[in-house]
Length: 157
Image (tube, rainbow, N blue to C red; front, top):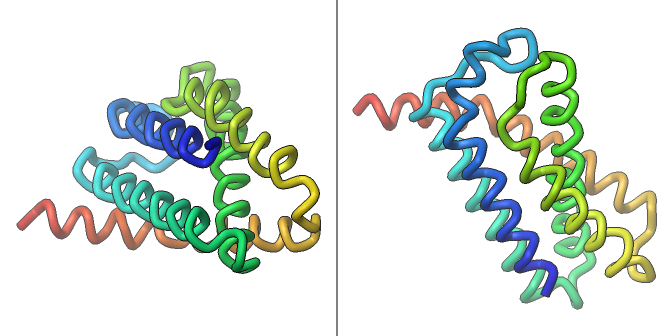
């Protein structure tokens, strides 16, 4: 099941970010605002949980719910393309390895693109996939600042 393989790659990617991105962010201010470990760890944990919940919903209802299927495929496509932007582009522009680049490019990108474009090729329409990708990306990105804020508050207490 490639869905479970993608969950593993997604988890490894988030662990790579959790270990090294907070320190890296201090040197990458034009690409990524500096973040503290505690707030970043909270945010990446919440995004990981969201990814697991979306995948679980897809495994349970993906065959019967088109909405769940497209939410899942939009999320997988977002995480796949995340390997290129910001990770690979940041590594090139900053001439410094951006945490998440290796796991993103070697795991998330090929596994995710396989899930979206080969495994589900006959069951998707491009316009719905594009819409779900954009919507999922906007929602996940808009959650980051509030998650950093909540993580900072929780960890201070």
